[in-house]
Amino acid sequence: MGPDGKFRVGISGSYGGLNIGDEAILQSIITQLRATLPVEITVFTRDVEDTMRRHRVERALPVRRMTRAEVVPEVERLDLFILGGGGILFDSEAEVYLREAEVAQQKGVPVMVYAVSAGPLQRASVQRTVRDVLSGVDVVTVRERMAKKALEDAGVRREIIVTADPSLLLKPEPLQQDVLEKERLHAGHRLIGMSVREPGPAAPDIDSSIYQRILADAADFMIDRLNADIILIPMERNVLDMQHSHAVISRMLRPQHAWVLKGEYTAGQLLTLMGQFDFAVGMRLHFLIFAALQGVPFVALPYAEKVSGLLDDLHVRMPPLSLVSAGRLIAYIDQSWDEREELRARINQLLPRLRERALENNRLAVGLLTRRAGGRNR
Image 1 (cartoon, rainbow, N blue to C red):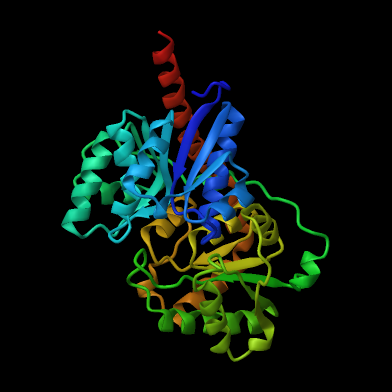
Image 2 (spheres, helix red, strand yellow):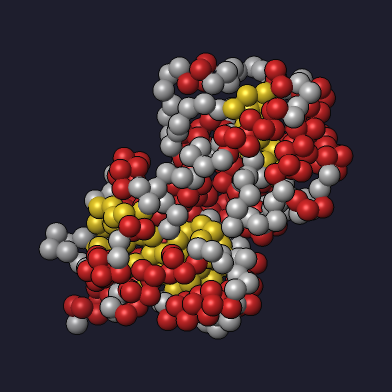
């Protein structure tokens, strides 16, 4: 605890403006901590300027450009180091993210692994690192049951608590007055939101050429069947979501009825925009979470266990992406549209339980901080 009486908390994850879902996670972690205790927050980020602008934290560090020797004093000063949340424990990135957690352990700083997803974890060296580091941290929570299994399969033998994604606690934020007009989100016209997901290390089995065709066919169906316009929502504007969104439109027969959201928004503002849609079809987890939070019925293309985990929690049926054809997706869309009110009611009924699980993350973090403070005061 600093001389100002504030707990010093460090948060590390996939932060720095690359993905709006990750920023929603960070925003929720910060909001919950600040609502509970006096805290000074340091974010270990890819982009210091973006993080300071978005989240107005006390400190931000360019962790991927820092040596271990530079990281040590920054971690040593903390009362709690939080790793997470989000899908950060997979083969090509896990060892990178675990470096600061390992330093914290060595320096006696409490560590919480906070609502992460895990997998794929196939490489033996990565499994060993995950097992060794997680075995020594103070608390591990994951956001879906299959993440727990992935860690257990990697050899982690300790308590792993299944909670939920922190972004389930996100609140809508106001928009500028002319946003809806600029984005052509006019009230009274049927609008359907759609999201894509680029291939990559966290999603190695995605074939973009296949899913783009599937989504394009589904979009044409909804234009004809529902007399709707399609708006593609890039959740990773600075990576490839923009390109993949336009690639879907380029494959459509009715591209004049589809466009890509243009503006840059905070997570809370994007949540507000989601409320303009009558229906949603998408791949990215946080696109689907935002739809659920706004009561927008949706159909998902589950490319990973974290998406399937959300669908399980909300009792939404959908086979994995590898088993979905255009015809099968259209059939699910057709049925889900007809049953949209029942789907909306079920999601609204189940969300409070999920939010309560999400709150458990903050309760566990606060418990670590207060126990540490109590031990110092003895």
